Amino acid sequence: MCGTIGATRRWRSFIPTILYSALYFTITLRLFLILVKKPVIMKDVAVAAGVSLMTVSYALRHHSSIPESTRRRIFKIAEDLGYTKSPLVSALMAHLRSQREVKNTPLIAYVCGYSDHRTMLANSFRRAYFEGAVARAESEGYRLELFFINDYSSRGGRRLSEVMRYRNVQGVIMGISPLNTAPVQLEWSAFASCVMGYSKNYKDLHNIDANSAQMLSLTLQRLKEKGYRRIGSLCGAFEDRRVEGVIKAAMAGYNHNRRVSERVPFEILPPHRWNAKYISHWTKQQALDSLIIQSHSPFHFLVGAGRKIPKELAVVTLERSTETILSGIDQRPRQVGAAAVDLIIYQLNQNLRGIPANRRTLLLDGAWIDGSTAPGC
Image (tube, rainbow, N blue to C red; front, side):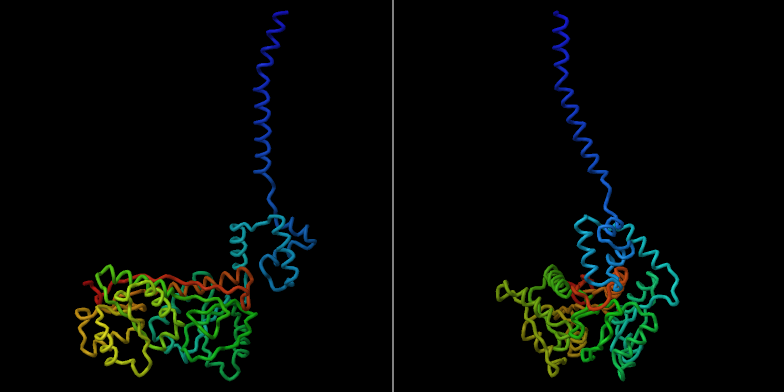
């Protein structure tokens, strides 16, 4: 009897261990089932939507052959099911599509308002934008070619669109053009597109440009680090229009919370004041120890007026080219050109063409480069 009671007591002592083990096993099993749950695939979306697998594939890539209402319905079903694209599979399929044989290598048009190649490429910035775009296009298996608006002025955008479609143009980059260039009305629905720089003519297109506000902030920071305190800035009225007042707005923001003695004088010069006499007079009147400019012309004006740079006045530019001795900002124009091509290729891979529903603006930061015109106080 005592033996039976002892055995019973020993058996009961194992009950908590057994229960804990069973609970642990149950929790572990449930976690395992959650982790190995079959992911939702495109076929599941197709079954739920009652359409073919190809229709789902096209719809999720915004293909124009699928009606907008069907695309929205399929996107809603995919979202409800928890379907997500695999980035590796998407990249592989984009690569496979790019390897398919076509009659002509896909072409990206670089459209500008200058009269010819020589004029367009004469400016170092315009040349760097274009060269950066060409290099990136070639590295991605595309060709990039210049198109001049003036060559098609007789029939405007319609004729240019016809030529582009015949030439197998897939994407259009609206390059830097003169401020007075009239807009060209292309058949945008046929192309992926973007515009470089600030442009009042193409405000609905994706935009790529240098980050003017960041460049000004970095320039002010570097000048202060070098010991300059009476900093001024000026630009021509045409320069202000070209960047749509971004520098003016950034300067106003900088000055807003500064004491009067620390505020940076800023001058927008009309054409009759865009000369050596006035600029030299203004810098003396403001008692500046340093001057921020955009284009290099004011620097040449000051040197021509006999000002000793940088002994009398340090001069820095927000548009530093590789050929200059000026200190200032490298806008990295080749990277800006490459970024424009990247944006075109992204749209093509997603089958996105036409005027975008949600316009994007991509601003690339500049980098400070020390020259010989602002050594420090």
